Length: 309
Image 1: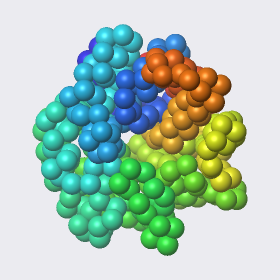
Image 2: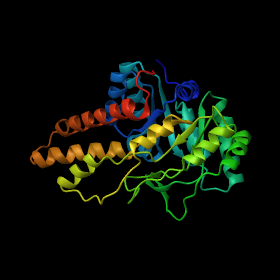
Image 3: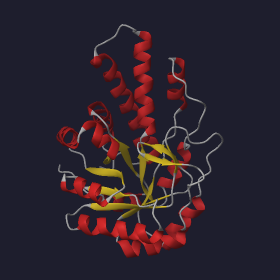
C-alpha cells in the first residue's frame, strides 16, 4: 500500500468517533515498534517527523525505513512533518515525499499566520499533500519548540472559522490545555473541553488535532528513577481525557514523550541489570518491544482506532 494523505483517514475517524495516533519517529527501532503494534491490531497510522528528527536521522534514511514499514505491514500510513515553522521546510518535505505537513505559524500574528499557512496550503494541495495548521500556543519543550507558560494561549473559537476559510487548511491543531514534553502538570490536568465543543458546534465534521498528548506513564518514570535517572514527579494527560477528545472532533492525537520514556526506561533497565552489556541489539530490542506494547495500548484502549485500517 502506498503512503496516503490524511483526508479519508480523518473523515473515517470523525464519523467513527475515534482518533488516529500520530507517533514521532527518530530511528529504526521506534518505527518498527510503532508499526508492529499497528499491524497486530490493524490500525491506521500517522508517522511524524520533526525538524530535529530529520537533522538527526537524515530525511532519506527515515523515508526508506517508513517505506520498509509499508511493505511489512500493508497498512494505511501517512508521513507527516511535525511543527514545520517555515515554508521552505514544508516545501522540502513535500518535495521529498511526505504526504502531510504541519505549518506552525502560531508564534506569528493572526494575519501573518494566515498568510504563511495559505502559502503552504497552496503549494501542498497542488501535490495532493494535506496541511495541518495551528491556532493557540502550547506551553512546554519539544525539540526546537520552546514556549513558556506565560507565552502560551488557548485557541479562540471565534478565530477558527475565519482561519480555516482563509487558508483552506485541512486540519487544525488547537490549544486547550495540553503541553509539550514530559514535564506537563504538577497537579491535575484541566483540558478546556468547552473550547473543543464550541469549535465542533461551529464547524461540524472538521478534523481537530491535539498536540502534547502524552500521558507520562508512571511506570516508565518510576523505572527511569529506579535505574539512576532523575525525573521529578509530573503528570501527563489522563487517558480518559484523551478518549473523550477522540470521541469528539479530535481526529489526530500526537504522542512523542511517552515513546521516549518507554525507550529510555527499557534501556536503563538493561544497563542496570547487565552493566557489562555492549551489544546494541541486546538493549535496543527490548526498547523496541516496550514501544510496541505502549503503542498497542494507545491504539486499542485510548485512541479507539484498532481494527480501522
